[in-house]
Length: 114
Image (tube, rainbow, N blue to C red; front, top):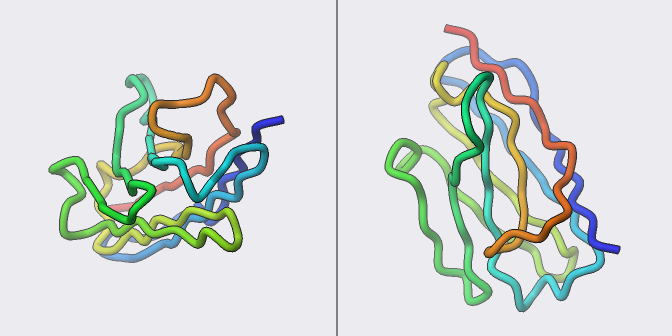
């Protein structure tokens, strides 16, 4: 069964940092492109970042230069390092394959206070 378990969120002041993790199971992790998404209150889920199976990364313009995604294929785990956080980064963050699997995790809440 495909599972994504996100963790590492929390409450942080603007300008602070957080590192999110996504533990996966039930997928051939090393061969998958992996994506981060986020959903802010009252808004649609949006794409944030991708790391390809070969390690190439892509970011939405609003986080470029502040967020870095990485992966540990030995641990089947995806990471998102978030620096210089802004209030507009407040959202629930999810990971999934790219294109996304129908199973989504619970996400992890990130709240940035200004």
